[in-house]
Image (cartoon, rainbow, N blue to C red):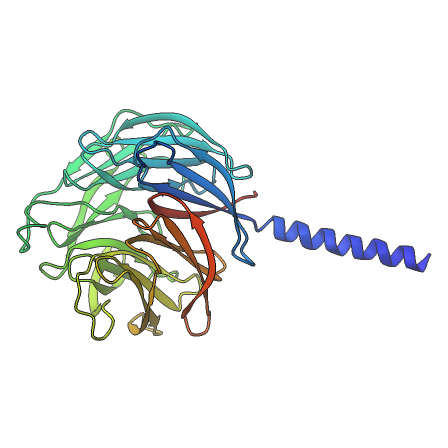
Amino acid sequence: MRIMLTCLIMVSLLSTAHAQRAGDDYNLVIGTYSNAEKTNGIHVYRFDLENGDATPLNKYTDINNPSYLAISDDRKHLYAVSEAGQGGKVFAFGFNAATGDLKLLNSVPSGGDHPCYVSVDKENKVVFVGNYSSGTLSAIPANSDGSLKSDVQTIKHEGSSVNASRQDKPHVHAVVLSPDGRFLFVPDLGTDKVNIYRINTDASEPLTPSDPGFAKATDGSGPRHLVFHPNGKIAYLVQELDATVTTFEYKKGVLIPVQTLSMRAPGFGGNVGAADIHVSPDGKFVYASNRGDANDIAMYSIAKNGWLAYIGSQSTLGRTPRNFVIDPTGNFLLAANQNTNDIIIFRRDKKTGLLTDTGKRIAVDKPVCLKFVKAQP
């Protein structure tokens, strides 16, 4: 009787542990540039947060260049830009987080050329899109089923900056919501500004210019992506053209620059092309990817006041790390190497912030966007 009771307890404990782990399962969703065979698209993998293993679940291929993705907070909808030159589009999908299945709902024009970034508010009322080549951003209302409406608000930036070959006109590169969802921050590579808009998701035109209407970056720096610290009081901007990271103090729609650091490793003299930036979930480290000849991740520790200190760089072991992601536990950093068709899985040391190659890879053609989403309710 005692043996049977012990066995029952062990089975119960194992079942509970499995249920707890299952409740923490995550999907890795990958956006790509399309390959010549048209077999690429949006990939969904199940990712093991303990050992870094990735198992393919699903793939949607009937879309051209789904280069950036956004997933609604309720995990029921996925939005993808189709970076297809003139007349870009935004696609809306129903998303089953448990199975990884994608169901196309509809698509609408992005309001410009070469859409490169998409985000969605917490209530899934409005989808925001940045169009690189046309220097425009759009606010697109969503229906209750997640599909997109056709009444798009589009705003066109004006201006230029000092780099004649890259900054002859505006180039919107991201559309990032503030932590409270009240403001939209729009890094513009072509004008060296982060433009700022107030958001009213219930208005017919959700975006209105804030006051002040922008934060100025260094001339020729090329603002690209912006990320907020988990405390909501600090923001970090990666700048493509000069490969720098700027720290901002943030309060109520206002960004105040306080520090700028280089992403270049000591002694590096090659071409640069800074791309992506993320903060570790514990708020202790910042990582930023650099393309060009560098092909590495610059790593910084974060002081109590939010300022950064460079701690080193890690090769991405491939070429053109346009995007990377840190898993929600902070155990792993995954670097998407666009031009070597692979995703490199690094383990993070949570104390030092440094990265170690696990030896694990995900083979995907031209990966350019990585998103984690919890698999269960």
